[in-house]
Image 1 (tube, one colour):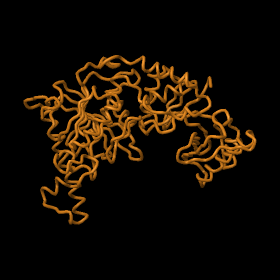
Image 2 (cartoon, rainbow, N blue to C red; image 1 turned 60 degrees about the horizontal axis):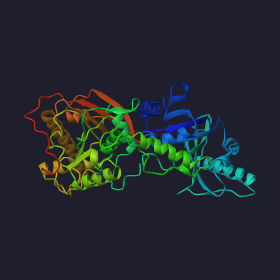
Image 3 (cartoon, rainbow, N blue to C red; image 1 turned 90 degrees about the vertical axis):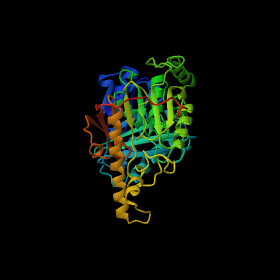
Image 4 (cartoon, one colour; image 1 turned 60 degrees about the vertical axis):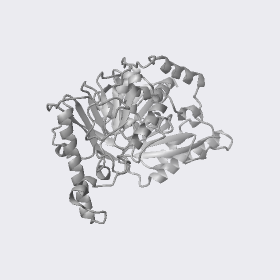
Length: 449
């Protein structure tokens, strides 16, 4: 346990930001911190694995590498898995599951490969524990074993995280399509508002005008306050044999001791709110408020209902607009209050266009699709016009799978960052808003609508 190789997988496009985060958390560099496709490889000890689970906002999991070797068939996988000292990690009375990913593997059946790895783990226990073997549980296992197959090599890992790390422990209220917390953190890093290598955030305001259940603003507020993302959840390493409760408590207490007191966070965040969110659906704002309370950041964010096409800047000081705008069927009511009040996750599609053309719900599928596109075009055109009139000096960052978004906005992007939202390839577009503002009055404080 004094020298381990860890692999931290992440979403596509996030590798460099994750390497920066790990460096900021650990000080590691060079051969001890390598950026690879789909994640980073880290050399460290068992305590480092625990700290990364507690603190990383960008990693999907923290995996300990146990074996790596060439393979040609399923028999090679069996021999590789049978040579791992699984008994050092868990007991035959615990349950486990095996997950395999592959890229360019010559094997015809990953299901059969998974079965052979399961057999090898069970057979090794049977030989060393008097015939007793751990059971298989694919739903709620005590232990997760992972394997990755490249075209020529197989790597075996044991998972120290359990539930993926985007599950921070505070989310209970959500819409139909919530943004994963890890992706929200990646957006904050890509925008430059959060600088993970330096472990600090910018001193300018942050505003999400389509905040949904609050993922982006809650991540931002936890960063500003120095709260660890894993501070409210449990991890798989608590069920592994190397786990030492006293050591884990010391690591958690160290994180708590590093927090600033009161309303000031690691960046000197003052009592005045610098992080803002709004949504057209008051229901979603209520969700976001409850999530913020559970996440321990309700005092550090200001959340309110409001139309993205009408909301004025929340502060006189320009800042960063960061948002995951609705698209497809969710676009129509994104900036139109009063269309059922359900928010960006459950919209009638094409509402704006149907208001203009009189299209009914019985219209043809082609007319429906056209209305949806027109509604999206009108929403983004009006959004850009609103920003040009009232948000001069702000920097807007929008995450979308629509590569034509700059044309819809009629704005020229100054940067585009590739990011993956699950299986969907997206771009985070940056727009520098420089148009002259009209007479400006900041949004009123909460409760003064």
